[in-house]
Image (cartoon, rainbow, N blue to C red; front, side, top):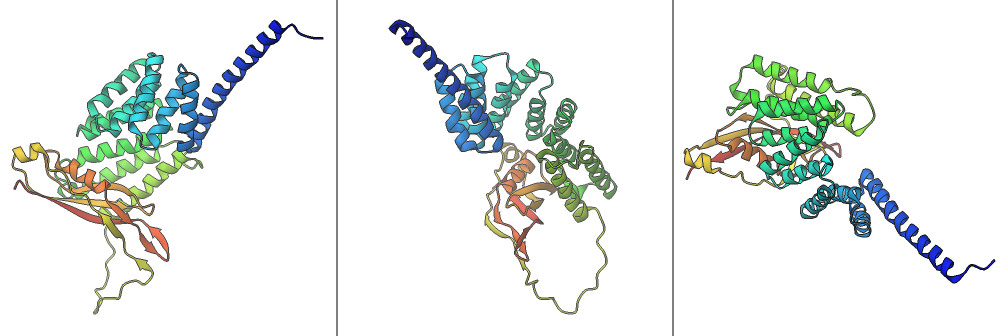
Length: 336
């Protein structure tokens, strides 16, 4: 049977429209799948195409925002999240993304504003509470940061970052500007014990997934610092001669150590002196954690810690394998 030309043309147009629609949907889904697998570069390319094909696809813009953020393209990430937020002002997710991008740019007030708007729309949005904790931690409002971290845990007990955020906020609140060396040994012990209890309260800690693995890693980190600063060292006999270096160990090699910024507030108040930090240089080549031992006021602790986190290094090696080590790092500040 032959179809009239008009009917054939109509069917062809409908089929073509369907193909375009399915293609756009497939691109979005594929982009999300790539993002979830950690293939951010390819996710960006696929999601860009999906958003171009359907400019009203909120999910395409939203995941394009996260994928772009993961490859450090902050400008593209912000644009994508804004597109998603404009398309659906009642969707809290893009606001969470905008809060994250603002944090990446160190725009703390903007990050706080976006995160608060997100929780107003979605009271169970745990990531927004977590970002509020991070914002207040960076502002030096440690007690508030701890409360926001607790709220993040309450809304999502499996959100591992929130547990570490709570530990960091509590540590900083207890230590204060003076540093760990200024507090009593009893308080130091209690601080580590409470931090360990927080991390060990994470549900399903033994599960084989990234979230539980993150918490287990932080527990190991905490144990290293606990052994270093709390537990008494075993007595040892002083050798008559200095032993030769361990041939199985290749010491850590520092590539760069950025200077810490001297704040306007410190300059105004004539603050000078040294800040001592205990830094965990992890086997993966990243600074895992920084603990203030002796500090200064007027934001200098935060600047020193920020500089320490930016240190580039090659990990210490033992028997050919990278190992984590704690080193003491000092920053000097002078008004002149």
